[in-house]
Length: 342
Ligand SMILES: [Zn+2]
Image 1: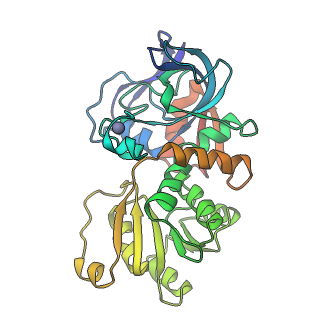
Image 2: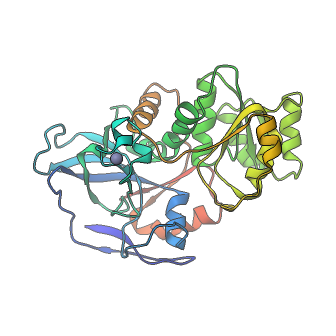
Image 3: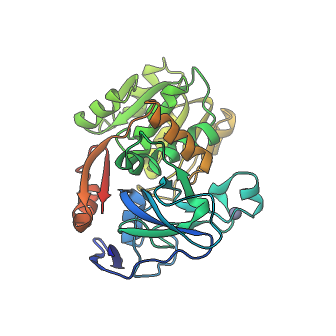
């Protein structure tokens, strides 16, 4: 089959588009014909060697996969050839104490598809049957590949971790990103008032089109003040944060008493100085969110089928042009998601 392999890490790393042997579905696994695969920041971190995971190269990256079941490994009976599926990228064991509670996102033996195991920038992929989620008939493969990872991350952050309530003020950092675009729509659907940040006019227009009630220019150094002003100085109840560094520090300025910052990324820095005094005096919470559970993916795909959430796709690249897709995302030349189609 044709596939893109990461041969060596770097900025940029060496990505090679070439022929590799077809994967084989082991017992309990399913062979899937990849129809589309979203590109994410995670793929860039892996390319750059920025993940705290020892690389095993060469590796086929790509974790946001949709496709069609092609054949079944031994012992798999719940799927059949031709089934349309999305794939959960955080593989889980199904047996540890956390999996047994439905918290696959913090599985003790969790593995990242496209990092610790070959991913979806390929014509075929073999994955555990437990990683498949049914794709509703009216959700296009490209839509699924733009929502399965990013928006289910946002769903996990808002519905599972921060538990947004009707009437909450929610601030979404970077509403044009994959997680941000999902978070605006999910928070609004759950009854929140949504403020989004965006660094350019075009990105702010995307946030508005997705339903953000207010949009703030994050290229202004006083953007936290602008957020406070929108809430009459009260601050917001929940902040969806995925940048880290100074942005995370500034988020505390926007946070109401009793408010929660939920974070799932640290592109701008993992070490953040924290002033504990306002944190405990105002009874605020800083909580982590990692990946997603099956329930989060199923909900996102169901919402996509019902028109409650839409994918924002900037461009679809053929597999042979995966390198160009990486460059576009790294250079922030995209409005919405970048999807690869084998
Ligand atoms: Zn587990």
